[in-house]
Length: 127
Image (cartoon, rainbow, N blue to C red; front, side, top):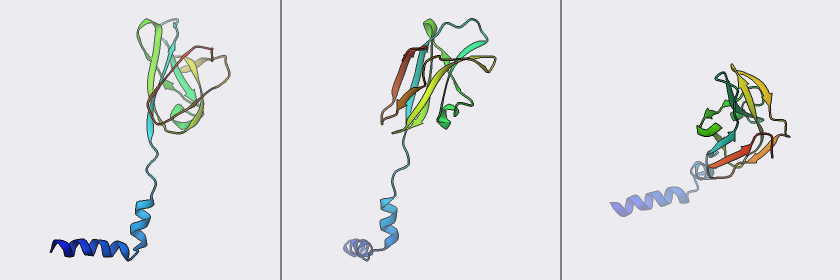
């Protein structure tokens, strides 16, 4: 019985059922990587915070932002899930009571995600 079962499976594939081949050729889902954005910034009070924004929907498409969490010693950081193999532009921003009050004065930063998690540690305003 075992050999019959195997022959049947092989025969099914050998018949060239196009559906079986198509399913096997489907590319894997886009992979996400964790990118941790980290910056040092001494805020002027409890209402102020840091965020990151950018041209990708995961970063708010410049319209909204991802808030960073206050870390120790004046650092701010947050991990964001971004698609692998993607080029995006981004900046740190200063936020007060939910509103953006200051953008980094430097040009837009660029990031190309790869296939491993990474940390992007930058100084405010410096490339």
